[in-house]
Length: 349
Image (cartoon, rainbow, N blue to C red; front, side):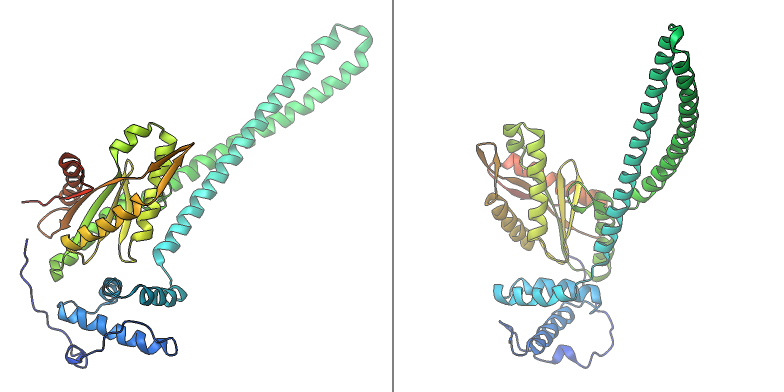
């Protein structure tokens, strides 16, 4: 669906749009900063030509987008430079989330150890009681009985203290569990698959709808799942989980820095492709299908070729986030219905 392009007033950026910038094919290793400047101007001109404001976010998106059409050698060289200054706030947030969950897991383990210690102390009390009863039946063991009685009293005191501390530990654990639960409601990371979670995905789609409404560019959403036929033939939950995690890693491997890779749920992943029309989304799906099909999975002595199904849809300002997601999911169903097709496009009326 075509949108009406609105001409926006912008400040004069030293007539950058009128400057003819040379297009580079390879970096000059003797003077890489000079070629980076040329490429940056090329990106800036493309932004202005597409009537988009040269904000840091848009510049980053176009920086990645234009780089796809450059030579592999140039891409590697620029990525090497970018890695030196990489500072992703989301990655910092993810690291904090992981640390928090690991800390909560440690507290849970401490509680488990304390509970086992309390059980052992209770068992020791019962053993002492049993031995005391045995000694009471033997008059010649009165001295030993006195010692056991004293020891029993000491153990009971220790047991009482430990029970009280266990109760305190339980209260601390419950309070921590509530804190972690509240944090989880605000998290952006899916620990199981190592990608963003559904909550973060939906927020980013909503944000992208707002940007499209403002600037009228095109973006796409694709949904990906491990082939149902493959899952049916394998019939091994642990193997299916490992294959699904492999798909997640491959999605991250093939994605651009501006793409959002997330776990939507039930082993279905999603990629939000910003500033990417349907045809470009198809090409991205082709690359992903090829990458996955070349990644075989070994189950015991059996070699399995991985296979995925993909649904593609466009993100438009006329539709809600839910409608966009449902459309992409419908694309997966459409791909299955068409038979021998790895992906299908689903567009709303």
